[in-house]
Image 1 (cartoon, rainbow, N blue to C red):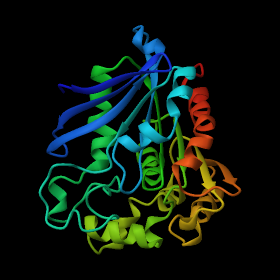
Image 2 (cartoon, rainbow, N blue to C red):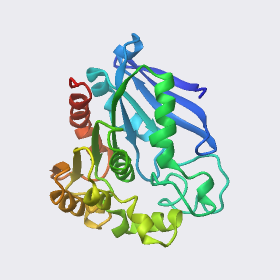
Image 3 (cartoon, rainbow, N blue to C red):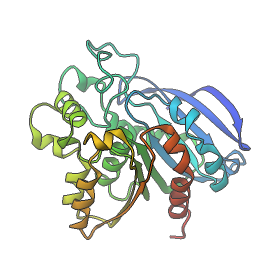
Image 4 (cartoon, rainbow, N blue to C red):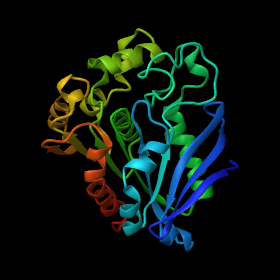
Length: 286
């Protein structure tokens, strides 16, 4: 679990760092961002919040565009944001489309060749990266949240729903909430998992919500009302909300933002509200 520090910059009395490590799960080198708030730099353990990015993104987009650091520093949260797919691997066709392959790992564990050797972003995020963070950063054990945007919102939701108790807080900006029913999701799930749609359902937040029977879980869903992908039926939050309405184990907070689209301008506007939401849950007394 050796980490190589790629860069660091002082930011809001904390430090925005980038690390690289060899991933055994993905069988390649991976890069991820880490923001250490002032308290962490003083050696005090802090809760950790994971952010999962969307299609075409790397670790850099969230670091540079969201403005999250001011809010994370205020609440003394460590924020970790991984890449969106394996990198530096040689798979024919991985760079042919923006919505499949490089930058589009969809946070699933691929079963189909040739993707299954490297494309295991779900296991990377929920197991290996958690272990790397626990071993190398001053985190509070058991104080862990997750959120994301678009494809990463889908990732955050399924990572939490498939692992009750692993994350104490969950939110999503404009998530792909029902991927088995939208073009983005159908393409990715067929490519990574094969043609059996029963396998797809295991990676669909709406299906997982409908069947969830574990520890009560609250989901904070945020959506721009002028999001063109909402209009194109790529996101389908209404399906997830309907599934949650029929399950007493799931509570939802849904905020629709009038006039906002799918961009990082939208994320930057409401990132502070999300971080405050996570901070309240992650710093609450047991």
